[in-house]
Length: 547
Image (cartoon, rainbow, N blue to C red; front, side, top):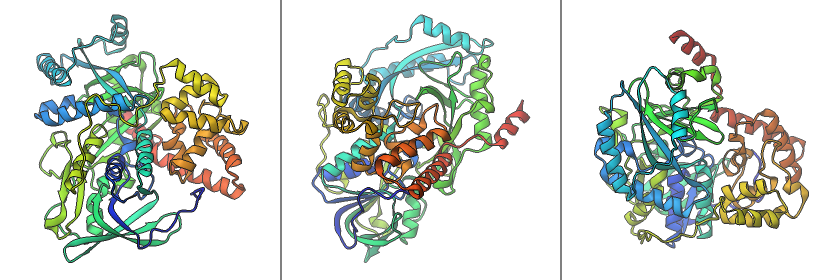
């Protein structure tokens, strides 16, 4: 690990009105909401913010069309409302995306049922059906699909957040600006419970190895798939688990001839819905649903899951000749769904649940179960109200403090390029990832040519963005920066040579010696490979056996 630019002050014996455990999108949203309500708030995350389930999602912001199948109309309304707020308030990070729902004669869902569902979905969204996909685009897609089937196409609109890690970083900075204390690489060892009430939290700083204890008025357990483990380590006994972990795996492919420009939503061979969508100049395919009760930090896609996803895409686009050898990398995360041992994973509700531990002998502690990218902000408001804080629903048309520059507005991009003496491409990249704060980063870039240098030769993002991540966005390790704050290492062209080049350029600006350079680079490569895993021989062999 690289040491933080500023040594972190000890938290020993400090009192916080709210301690939030877990720094995924839900935990950061909750900490932000509590801090905005004026409560002295501490947020701790055992690894890095957004490094768990948040970074292993399908990266879409959606109203939940499939939830209609299970009658969850309330969840759909909430999701649609929150999607519109994100589109309005975080327009640089959340973009409208056209979705094409594909059915063929073998599909388990009838065209009539789908039309009815889409009609209801669009009525709930308050929008008319849009025909954004042109006839030419549809014809191109149809030519790429399996010609042995008769395909039906259905248009609808949702949204994509290519980098939810950046959304988390923005909410994190807003939490800090409101007075929250935040610590990544800080593990919550146990919640201190005495006389039926939570009193504090025992922490371990993963950077220094030192243990610390803080007092807490409320503890909110937002640790996702680790929620039950937090309770177990704290000797909080419950009649049954809160969670039924479900692994979702994805594969990432290079763009291929005939690959869709819109998001494709279709059925795999077993009738399960899957997405094939453009992402970060690549194609993202997912997801699976497999029960997983193991260590969430060590979950990996199985060979069977990889083969399932590869075969699904290969059957959909046979002319592309996709195989396991085509896959760039794979990743998996464990969804923290409510415990439902007898139900199908697809049928388990995606609505979040707030579990009050008062009846478990740990009053003033809540555990958050479930939730998703789209509804994190509404979950946070509900959680704040649950502990007695004021959290009113935002005005439907109000533009919040996070409202950002639109990267599609050329005037904004030209202004950033002028401020920082950088190219228009670099300026647009700054606006896309940093919104209004792009101007501050551009001014920093003006301080020296080394700050205007690209992170590596394949990207227009510059070293000034990296320095900003360390200085203001709570980055501690090189992985915190290149995988989440300035996520260039998720790009299509990134390689080990890019990692070395980036480490040299960053180290030269930050003053790393040779030992620090080597340690940072080694730790980064280990983390990146553990997250974006290459396809192993077992998956290739399994696919070959299935042919």
